[in-house]
Length: 309
Image (tube, rainbow, N blue to C red; front, side, top):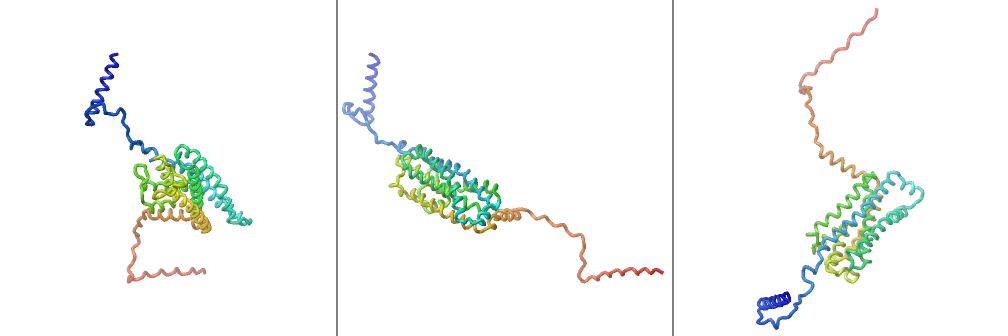
């Protein structure tokens, strides 16, 4: 009984304190419950999705490093073993040869893209259209494959191509740091983003960040909202398709350029070595040179011939 009485007095004291704080005269007109607009600022945006875009980009990029290395190693190894020349001499067309490469190696890239989108989309991009997310992943895989084709003519060693190619592919993604602050994508800089998106890794990073921003406010991106924003997701998809066409054409042209491109890294390394190496000072000659007006030393006369009696 005492507990109930104490609770009632506490409630009355609380109502009186609230009434006094709100400037009211009596507690009988004070409403029992108060409502606040929702969502409040801490709940209007999920902070996780500020970092989800770069994180998804990094995961998918890592999953494609091994296929990129495999493509570069296979292409350069065929060039080293002269297998392509044998096929072309045997009557195979260059277009048929490159089409077979695209289909055989593209299967691995397509498998990685489909598996990654199936695992990531339900948890990270739940409010977005699944077909739109899948299109982003597939186009990124296709552009990465063509990027590897364009890198292959610059190498003459399969081992070097398998090491340097994936490293260059990864380093192209680090330009994303120019367009983010505290993990979230910056607004504006449309031209700079479009120019950086000519690198497939950068285009995918920007597209994944656009999806993550819309997921943070529980909207997502659908085919009806794909053109919204200063740098919309539709622009990323179009640039990825353009990247695939550009790098495929570049790989075709550079492959026809011949052996000179494969020797380019060796020539650059030789030039850098010659610039960085210090020339050794020449020792002074100990032979004293005579002045030009000095008299010439007479030649020694040959010995007289021996006369045998």
